[in-house]
Structures are given as C-alpha cells and as structure tokens.
Image (spheres, rainbow, N blue to C red):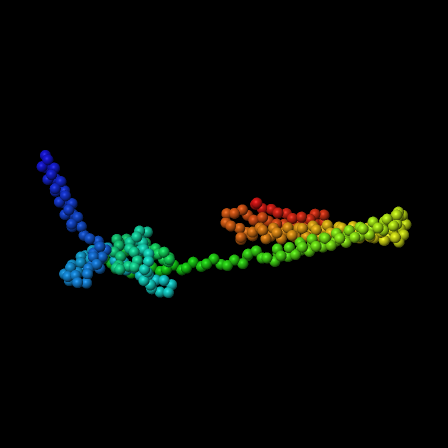
Length: 270
C-alpha cells in the first residue's frame, strides 16, 4: 500500500514537471530575453530565441505604442502603460507590447502629463500601432472682474466725514444763535405775541434760526453716521465672489431713508 502511494506521488510529480517544462514562454519574456543577450552571445542562441518569439507572437497581438504631445511625436520617459487599467509596462518602452486578443483600453499614466485613452480591438498574430496623444492642457480659470470696487466705500466714508463735520458746524452755529437769543430775551423782557416790535421780531427770527441749525445738525449727524457705518460694513463684509465655498452667505446692507426715518438695515448670516 505504501509502495503504491509513493509510485502515485512520483507519477504526479513527473507529470506536473513535464507539463511545466512544456508550457511555452510568453512573447514578452522571450523578447526580454532576446534584448538581454550580450553582444557576443552565440548566433545559434539568438536565432533560437527569434524562432521561439515568432511562434509565441502567433498567439498574441503585437502592439507598437507611439506617443505624441501637442508639438509632435515624443519619447515618453516617465510613467506607465496601462492596459484595461492594469500596468503592462513602464516607460520608456524598449519593445512592443504583446497583449491577449480582444478589445483593450490602452493609456499612459504619467506624473506630469495626461493622455487620451484609446480603445483597440486586437487580433492574434497581428501587429498594430497605436498612438497615445497628450490631452489638451486645461485652461486656467478666467480672471474675474467682479471683485469689490473700492470707490463706493470711499464715497460713503467721505459722505460720513462730511456729514459729521457739517453736523458739528451746525451745532456750533445753533449754540451761538441760542446764546444770542438768551441775551436778547434778557434785554427785551416780555414780548406781546399779538404785536411784536422790531426787537421781539429779531428775537423770534434768532430763535427760528437756532431751531433750523439744530435740526440741520441732527440730520447731518444721521446722514454722516449712516454713511460712515455703511462704509465700515462695505469694507468688512465680503461679496458673494469673495465668500469661501460652503461658508454662510454674505451680509446684505440696505440703507433706509424716509421723511421721518433714517437708518441702516443689515441682513444675512452672522
């Protein structure tokens, strides 16, 4: 029984070894062996490899890969040749590719260039040349012209400064008129509203001027304050173009001006 087991194992090993020895080498391996022969190798050895390669090429498709850039044909020195998204060779290529017949997707993966993949229907014992062309360079993003202009903020700041300055000047004039009215009132004493003399008319005019200057100062302060605040907000809040992707929408600034209402409406995400 033990002898039979030994004989069976020996027969299986012999059969496997024979099958492995009879398995033909791939065309790629034969071509690499041929390229690796030293210059002084025997002619018989070189000829034997050529005969073996010719027989192996009958089972596969021979693919000659050419590479072109925008300027014309080039010798690609860096990258990998991919066949059906699997590495088939590294650059630079020293020989053709020997690929199984069928539809194949061939491209080059390079660190500094992009190539357009091609589809090839390969046939056994046929030689085909494929040209892989460099993909057009992506155009840089167009320069934007919608950046926030500076002049609106500068104009608002100028209006704010002018409004505040005017308001201060009107307050000074109003205080002077008020002082004049107090002095005149002390000198006149009591005025008859139904019959104003010249002094009382002048006092009434001075009081009216004082009120007008005071109201003007209030309006100037409001306009100047709103313009100054608008200028600050204008420079502080980014425009939609300046807002980073995914960030909250920018704040919207809306002045409110009416017969009896002055103000600034600010809306958006804070």
